[in-house]
Length: 313
Image 1 (tube, rainbow, N blue to C red):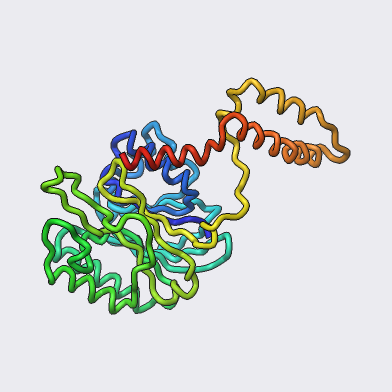
Image 2 (image 1 turned 90 degrees about the vertical axis):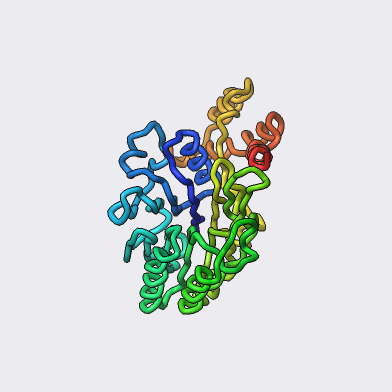
């Protein structure tokens, strides 16, 4: 199954933030993604000088909240998405992965800040539970914690935790194993006033755990934003395996590049033109991989290392 995830981006008016989100989605091979608290109407972002939406289908809950609290973006070639219900705090859908034809239900959540306002969300989730027999996944920002240890600094009340705990219990949900950041949000204040909380979660029912038992959630450093992005990953895929061939633009800047391509393209293969083209492309791969090793020493890995260093700074 292709990668799915979400991120509370707290406003996307800034072009730098749009570039960061676009880079994250591309670099992590995302096929379906939830953007929370965009504070933009879809046409606003589409009119800007950005290609973050190119090739993606989009659905939002703008009709239920004027500031566009939840966006669902997906690649049609990766997922078939059937939307079931909307509110100001959630979008619920049934999803079929085109890679393996597995079907599951997904609720993308961005809860209100107020305790009383969140009651409507808990009630909506309980209603969905009554009709749900499939693997069910919750992703999003719940704007509350499950226990006091999930907040460092600031205060939390037994009442707000009890409402959340009650909903989770009734719906039969549990936290999906996760790696990365424990606290997924901070107020980014000075150290003396800093507050950390685990507001963002990935939760699944028993059917989800049975079907996707090797999946886990990874929370990345927050970077420019105050929330951490999250993607659902597969343990078997994370162990490695054959990677798709990727072309890097930097290869074209070397003096050897044109000579390598010219040499390979001069080769002759018997067969149709399409057969000859495919054979030349296959012959070009090892030559370009050799160029990468000799001149750039693994661009992709070094780029990821540099990006992690930047995020830590």
